[in-house]
Length: 272
Image (cartoon, rainbow, N blue to C red; front, top):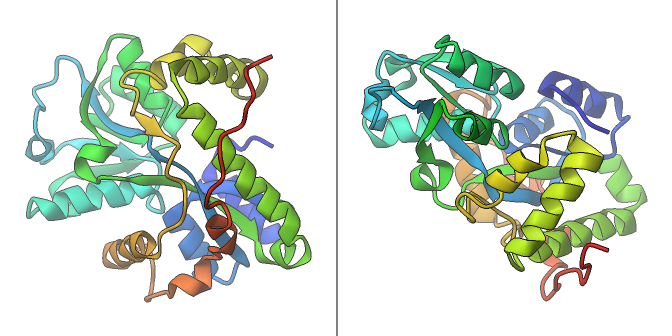
């Protein structure tokens, strides 16, 4: 199932109609804190976000964003925390910029129309602005937050208890797929064709661009869960006001499926 907005995804989990999905990590933590029975079981990918400005913009450094309009997916997004962290690292606060919440598919048009000065979300929407010739990368996510975790695999806790074998198959499959993608540029180009035409209805040219310019724009080889990384995310979320109170790792995470991917190799699929 494809969701076009995070609110709909949230409601699907609250109703229990969705047993597993990719979701923003801070949103998963916040949902758990609100009593929604979800657990993070694996990562979706790392990096895969970019902070974009217009090509002719006079914004060349993060501090140049002072007083500018910056669009993020929503306040529960990893990209919101990325901006929060980058500001904090430079002795700035959210009050130094004008933050706008906007669905990622709407961001390219907003940047083109100069309705905002900068945009940040997951790919391929950021790459679209660059490919179309009016967007420029100010920072890749990894430059502001090394090993940035973009999205996570979240499962319904009841489904986990009833079907742990299915969750393990899903997690292992994602791990093998990620390693296959990291097996060479030819694999990434094959993936772009399959995913674009059969699942996301995107232009294959756009996905080829995102998966290759540069090759580590999005990474899939290191998807195992690390407690320390998630504790850092939850601490930032607390400081940013996304979480109302501290939350323990064990409350929102179930790492056993991730731990069981140790030694897993890539799929042998060759695109036939």
